[in-house]
Length: 171
Image 1 (cartoon, rainbow, N blue to C red):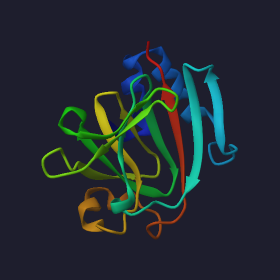
Image 2: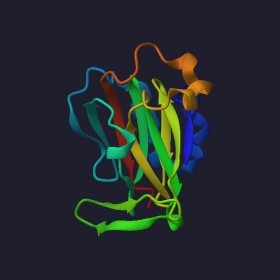
Image 3: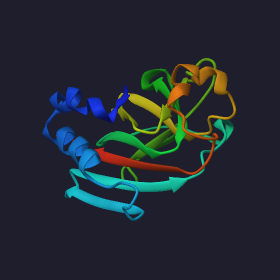
Image 4: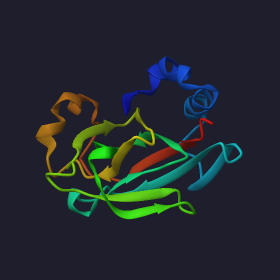
């Protein structure tokens, strides 16, 4: 799992040429003007999913993981919390569905409840197949946990978030 600001994206070009394409897309595109939905960058190897939503309660979130694609999740507007947990510590609640390219996990004190962190506007995360992650969580439920990044927040919590998830097949 990686968390960083888009201004430092070149540090991660070494992950591979498709990651470089993903970061260059995020840097060179007016993400606030993109239409919602899927945007191809390199066919089914690299594509972006543009989303607008209001973050949900942690209690409504589910940890997920993918087999083929890595997620580069960039917050273009707003802020949210995300969760991370080591996938081997999680208990599968919904088996891997190849058509949807996702599996889901239950949270418990024994399987890994996950660490929550703030992803503010202008920041991105990278989640690989080894990472269970829970995106789109409200920051208002526990803002004191987010104090290291609070200076990056530009307004009230839990307003609409514009997020661009770039799916990268590194193979």
